[in-house]
Each structure stands twice: as structure tokens, then as C-alpha cells.
Length: 102
Image (cartoon, rainbow, N blue to C red; front, top):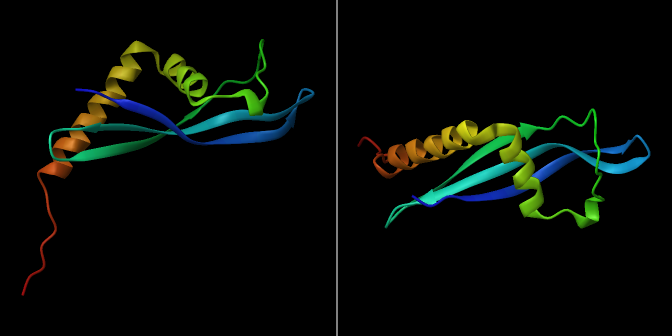
């Protein structure tokens, strides 16, 4: 199964330790699909910003950088767990529907 991780939005402190727009929370999506249906699992990750060693200015951030932070906080087992959750959402969603009684 293939997974596409994307940053949806970030929450920032306007100013912190002489830096501006310091990202402290990431809202992200993990998308997956089968041959006929796709889903995006929406998650959020708070970041530990208590000891920033290499600050990256907000305007220089990329989706790849932010997602690498998220995956770093999750660790390998956390990444696998999120992807499994996306698989479960796909399975449930592709096998359900809404019907109206008449």
C-alpha cells in the first residue's frame, strides 16, 4: 500500500526566543487508496520546541521538512501505526454506505 503524507496546516508562536513564526503543532494528512477509492486520515502532532538547535525560518519550511519532524516524533512504530489506521479507515469507508429508509 502506498501512503502520501502531507502537511495541512501548522500552528505557530508569533515570537519565541528571538525567532518568529515558530511551529509548535502540525496538522497533517495521510492519504491512501485502492483501485477505486481513496481516503485521507487527518491527524495532529505537537512538537517539542523546548530546545531548538537549528531554527528554520517559516518562509524556508517545506512540506518534506515538516513531515520529517512529524515522523521523527512518531518513530518507526508510530509511522506504521498511523499508516495502519489509514488502511483501516480505507477498509471501513470503502465497505460502507448511507441509505435512507422509505
